[in-house]
Every structure is written in structure tokens, then in C-alpha cells.
Image (cartoon, rainbow, N blue to C red; front, top):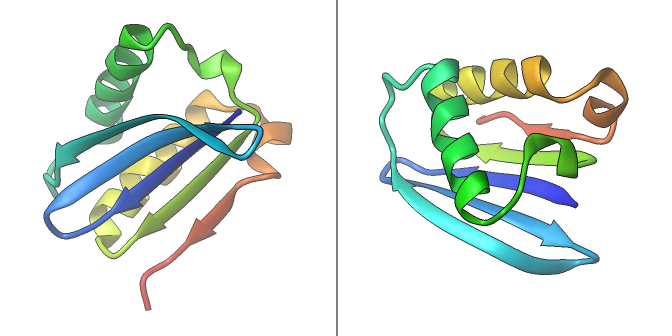
Length: 95
């Protein structure tokens, strides 16, 4: 399963894909001050609500136009997912 994040100036859209099919999606407000720990708690709560855990995922995709949130999500993913899982991650940086 793949965890995806699309960070915009107004909303952060999070989702999960299994076998190329969107299986869950959530939309939360963009808060540029949110830390990696706050994102971790938020995402963990969303996963629990859907019956998921971080261990269920083997890939991460992050797209962001907000550098401060990109940094927090990169650090969160580095701390939560194993090295082999991060090798399959695609992280897009704002231009």
C-alpha cells in the first residue's frame, strides 16, 4: 500500500492506494506551523479510524508547494518508515 500527501496552500489531502486504487482519502487544513510530531499524531489517528497502521505501507509519495510542511513530512516519513520503504518514496520539492 502507498501513502500519498498533496500539500497545498489551503488544504493537505492525504490518501492511501492499494493495487493502484484509492482506498482512503482525507482533507485537513494547511497549518504551516504544524510539526512532524503533530502530523504524526494526526496521520496516526486517521489511519486508526480506517483500521490502518504505518506498518501497512511500503511506499510514500509527497507533493508540496509549502516548504515548511514538506520539511515536517519528510522528517516524519524518515522517522516512521524503514530505509527500504523510503527508497521507494518520491518526494517532489516546490520550484
